[in-house]
Length: 212
Figure 1 (cartoon, rainbow, N blue to C red):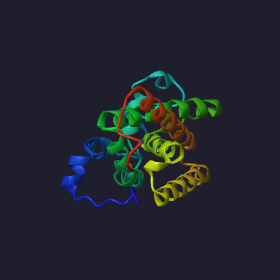
Figure 2: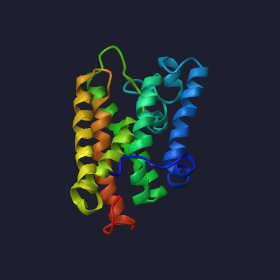
Figure 3: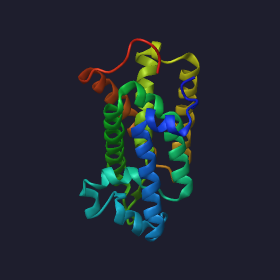
């Protein structure tokens, strides 16, 4: 079962350096937001890089990267960091640190772009402000989905069942909760699936033999 963590914190830092850095970046930016206006303050979020689906901020490309590392409240941070801490590490091991980092960031950017593009159609008087690592995390899930469907020998049956259950529940919750950016989740999942396949073809990394 690949989604159970057995490592102590020192082994975790050594085996999963990118995931560790991403977790630290999320926590660091949450502290910065908390000390400078509050992580739930929309003006603070926009100042530090939240995506906005209207106005001049919509065309500021840096926001599509920065928003990946911002979170609206502690609960938002906690659940995203938990998912990153527990579920993401096996993909870093199989892809290698820089390919994994590329998939995570590129998947998050694509998810944010799609989210803004879709939500822009519904703008009337109030713009939508969006932040969070969810799109990038769903890109990681997309990479796992590619493995589960296309490289089945690399993932054990129990892990595949866990992944499918996680995705079904995640997609249902994405549409059930009005505060959740469903397009970022779907966009990240689709982006991660195709990015993994593209990276697999462009850059060789450990595969075929063994499991994630």
